[in-house]
Every structure is written in C-alpha cells, then in structure tokens.
Image 1 (cartoon, rainbow, N blue to C red):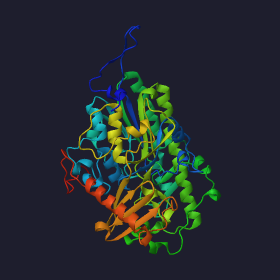
Image 2 (cartoon, rainbow, N blue to C red):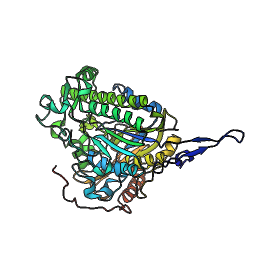
Image 3 (tube, one colour):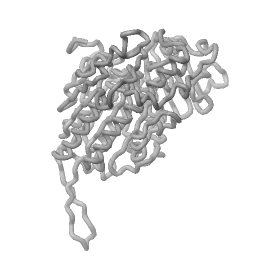
Amino acid sequence: MPAHLSLFRPAAFLAFLVLGSLATNTTVVHAAPPNVLFLICDDLNCDIGCYGHPQVKTPNIDRLAARGVRFESAHCQYPLCGPSRASFMTGLYPDQTRIKKNAIYVREHLPNVKTLSEAFRDAGYFATRIGKIYHYNVPKHIGTSGHDDPYSWNDTFNPRGRDVDDEDQIFSLVPGTFGGTLSWLAAEGTDAEQTDGIAAAEAARRLNKHASDKHPFFLAVGLYRPHTPYVAPKDYFAQYPLDQIKIPSVPDGYDETIPKPALQSIRRKRDQVNLKPELAAQAIQAYYASITFADAQLGLILDALDESGLADNTIVLFTSDHGYHMGEHGHYQKTTLFENATHVPLIISAPGIPGGTVAKTMAEMVDFYPTLTQLAGVDAPNDLSGRSLVPALQNPETMVRDSALSHFSQSAPGYSIRTAKYRYTFWGDDGSAGEELYELSTDSDEMHNLAGETKWDSVRSELKQLLRQRIIDAQKIPRGVNVFDVQRTKLSPQ
C-alpha cells in the first residue's frame, strides 16, 4: 500500500505529522479519513459519451471521467441484477455466494459475510444507502427496502416518485407488465418528481450534513434508471429524434452459428425478438432518454459534493450492475455472455490520484471491495476474491488483470473469459454444450464465432485452459465465510 494511503486509519481517527525541513517548524496536520461516494445506475451499459458513444449525452459522467480514472474494460461477474450486486458487495464470485437469481437476500446464503459497506461501518464510517444497491424488483419494490441487507448500513432512504404513480400511463410490450419487459414513458413533470430526482436531492442533503458533522461516510446512491420501465421527463426523449436512432441488424443465418444455450440467452424474451423498426427505435430512444436523465441526477450529486467542500477528500466510484443489449444480436436487455451484457462503465476518482486517464487493465466488479478499502486504509476480509485496482489508478499502464470472468446459467451453465484480444465462452461441462470464440479487433460486435475454425484451435485451446483455471479459483469456498448451498427460509415476503 502506498505510504500516503496507509496513513488513513479512520477507526482510530489518528493524526499524523508532516515534517518540514530541519530549518522550519514542525507542522501538525490532522488527516481526515477519505469519504466514499458510491454511485451506481441500474441496467446501464457503456452507451456513454466518455466511452465513445456518438449520440448519447452524458456530460456529468464525462466530467467525472475527466477528474478520475476510467476503466475501458470492466466486466460484471453475472449479467443479472441480484447476483451481480451480491457479488460486488461481498467481493466474491457468484459460484461462491451461491446467488444466481434475483429475489434473494445475501444472508440466506452467506449469514456471516462482511459486506463492503459493513467493512466501512466497522472502521467508524457512517454508511448510508439511498435507493437500490442490492436487488429490487423494479418498479414493484420502489419505495421499499427490496432485498436490501440491513446489516450493511447505519441508515437508509427509499425514494418513491411519480414514475410509480404514473404506471397506468406506461407503454409496455405486454400491457401491465414491467421490469423484465420493454416499457417506457415520456413523462410529464420535472426531474425532481421522479424517484431518481428524489434520491439525488436526498444525496445532496446528506452530503451537506456530512460536511457539517465532519464524520467520515460511505454514501451509496443507487439510481433506478435506465432500468425498465424507461421513464424520464419528455424533454429527455426530445433529445433523441426517432429518425436519428440506429437499430442494430442481425445477418440471416446468424442463429445457426452459436451454441444452443447462447441462442436461448438472446431469444429468451419472445415478445422482444425481431421488433419492428419503429418499435425498436422507440425502445432505444427511451433507453437513451433514461440514461441522460440519470446522468442529470448524477450531476446534482456531484455538484453537491463540490459545493459541500468534500470533493477533495472523497473517493468516488461510478458504475452499473451489468451491461445491456439494445438490439445487438437481436436481443434487448441483459442475461447473455456477450460484451453488451458483461461490459460495465467504471470510473474512480480519489484524493491524490491523477485524473483524466484511462486504465488499460481488465477489471472485474469483485475488485471494487479491495480497491475502496485500500484507498481508504480500511481493513478488509482476507477471503475477498477481487484484486485491488489501486496500482492501475496510480499508473494507468499497470495491468492488474489480464482477463475478466463472467458466468450465466441458461439451459446449461455458461462461463466466459474476456481478454484484451478475445472473448472465449463455453457452455455445459467443459464446453459440452458448445463453444464461442471472438477476435475483438476485427469483430467487436462478436458476430462471427471462430470456435469451429481449425486455424483458431491453438488460441481456443489456450483460452479454454485459462477459463478452466479461472473457474476453479472462482469456485473455492471462501475461508471464514459460512456458505449455505440451499436457500434458507425467506426473511420477508417476495
């Protein structure tokens, strides 16, 4: 750990001495432990300005990237809300947490786990959750604690806005069905009336309070957008004219080129396959509008951080829970092992870390836990599976990882390894249900499966061996953590 980081021991609230030259007087500096602002959007992919999207407007995420470090290739460990959130909040892989579906409380499988925010609580931080950090059914659980873990926080706030009250106005491909179905609304009213607008206002209030009480904090703010239903004030929709929306295309015969479980993952939403162009354009427009709306709420929070005077001593991490498809491979939403579903935005800014850089290393969401605790000098459990990204924050050329592991179970379990040059995926026991190989420099859309081509056998074999070892490591039972394979009695009604 760098010397300047090791000085922060918030549990003890230590002061340290900064010594000048022998010719000057000794100056006593009381070092405040760095705060943590953890910001996460729901179902946000990398259709963001600072990630190179030519159309989507995200000025506030972009300005955070300008003062922080942007990770070009960060990936979730499971492309579904509940498993992903349980994974990064525990620093463990889904094969270790045993959480591979939604609607599960983390302690049903991990009764004695120490979560990320709990580690900060134990170090003397005041840990607050605003909105969605663990799994929630959206929009059903908006305004409630969803499947939250109460042991992770000192305090919580559950925003609820007019987007919930306006449900009868929302268009859905399956009328009256939301959450897992494409649905959207160009809403009346203001940002401040929406659930995420209320969350942003509360986050600003909390930041001002912390500025006054000067107590170290871990503030986690989970926005609901752009999760379906895609609801945002209508002005955001107007920023994306339908005639300017580009709809991804899928070549004839594509379905026959990928394994059956992979095909099932992109065809599982039968009512969302082969959308008519006008309907597809509306869905994409609504998704983009929701992203820009969420970005505006992030802007309010970042403004409050600056205005409170806390910015210089606050670590900020911004991310999503997984990626998202908007028509790529003919699929909408998540739950695939393609780039669109595993790739997540990740931006970290921290005191003493140069801003405006791009980290080249591969990164995983399990890395959040050891990264934040190292930056803050907080003790972390020894059984974390993630790696600290601090070396890459200090030097963006540093390679902390050379691969990222993702997992998703369809008719057969699938595992995928992403390297700088390739994505290799196998389905079933050691690939018994099929394999995929994509060369990303020539096929960034992952549309040409090379797994069956002889000339790629050596690459496929090397990546398969790497993937096997990554799976073995990700399945090791964590030391010191009790793991229940079978889900225990529900803590509350679903």
